[in-house]
Image 1 (cartoon, one colour):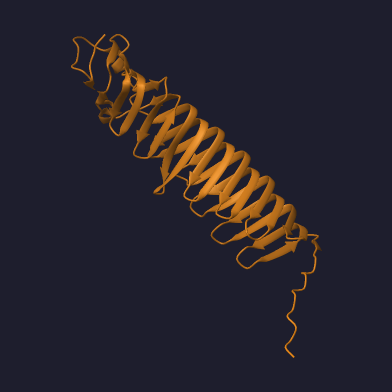
Image 2: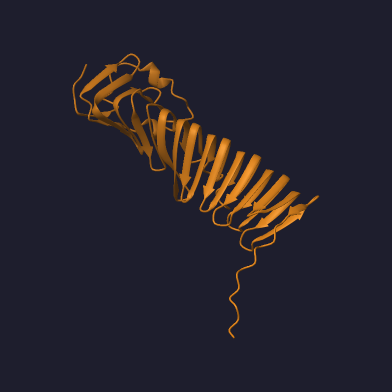
Length: 289
């Protein structure tokens, strides 16, 4: 057992071969394997030379490897496999990702993270941070495979857009997110509910399926359908499959309804039916005598 407040390793090579290090995957670059690991704040350090495994404990232990940073009161580190375990609440961060959770398992060489228990964090995509909270988040932070999956009461906020659901798949390279299970997407005055919503983050278009409900505040408008294609930039929505549009006391039903929010226009196709009520006549001021 060692005591210390700051360490840097790999330590000086011990005499004789180290079979564990010789078994590293050939796919990993020599430069990646040679990255040093800095440790700060550890008051207790345990090291198993046979397995090349470390345990760091302290009020605030910080382990840094290149651009990766781990912080927790207890950190287990496997030097041969470049893997870390944070069994108590901690945080892992990189220039494009930050996650805090009750338990974190991280493959530092592969840049793969599994965070479980009251997970909160953020992911960078297109120059914009997406903030997430969930019961579980699994994330890949490699430059060529930036993908994350969040499950369990997921909330994702990106700019002025908020999405909630049971499961979110977030592909930062493709700039797409898919949300499933009790989905609610809120964008400004618009609120879209569905069983599943696929969002193109580049175009702001969304495809919703299953028990779709679209509402717009300030216009007394509510629409429902089996499916909906919704474009925020063009301010239009296409409702299909038992589509119903209600505005005020008026109701429009059809197989498909195209809605233009900017022009306050709706076009129905496929057995359209409408129930409309005349507007109440405004009170007129008697003409002067």
